[in-house]
Length: 389
Image 1 (tube, rainbow, N blue to C red):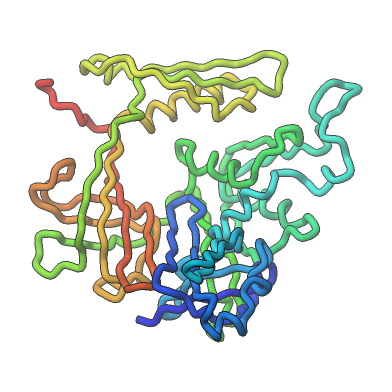
Image 2 (cartoon, rainbow, N blue to C red; image 1 turned 180 degrees about the vertical axis):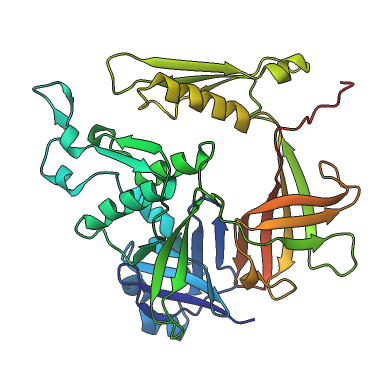
């Protein structure tokens, strides 16, 4: 399996050249998250000196990425660089393409010339507010269309066709200055939300141009999940090693308090309790959720309280292991978000036999073909406390 490290123009997607990297170069991608690429080179390498990377790799204008065979595993705009004179190493770091959305705001182009606040009427200016309706995919697509309308706001982005139907509503006031990626994660985190991933792709087989595909779930299929990928730890010579299992109950919540109403004259509060856990002998474990302060509707805030309880009703179990990227299955045949069947026997916190899971993240480096994988079990709100406890 061939591994290449590349760079190009972030706005146009045009490929520039391959990079002569050292083994310490690495990359990471994660479900509904930004990801990263870090390239290390030797400043004394004649190829590096000819390329003039300090001039070539301009923050936010240039992307770096990693390719396995013909598949781009991760790529995104350069953000920082670091040179160590003692070692002669030069490191260039980039965020995944989704990191660009953390630098944008959910605002129409009119916000550049209209006030965000209507001072005569003492209210946020409705002229720069956005009320978006329909399926979550259509809401995301509408936000993307607005984002790309700004001067300099249209890198080589593309997104999926519309998803008809849906009665969801999202309102973004200009005074919120809502971060675009935060608005996306609000949609991915809510109950019945969808996955949103920004995946770098070659435009064609010539591999001279990259595009940033904003991949979104639908009403019928909210999760971006292929597979299943099967790893059977009970079989000899399985392509899996260094399996570690973590069960983290730090954030289990039996009562949550949620704050809202920041943009209205009256603050709002919501609370909810997991009576089932309390009746099972769990202590009162309280959490304050301040992530929804802009919500001005009590029913919406109540729904966020219920969502928080559902998401924090049990320990979070994660499994970390390594596989060979050129083994079976090849890393180019599966991706973050895919379903997994992890077959185990006698491993704490896992069932004997098939454990249904999803791939939460994967990592790799230039030193070898080892791929780090993080998965988590897929479970409903079934009882995880023993009946005799």
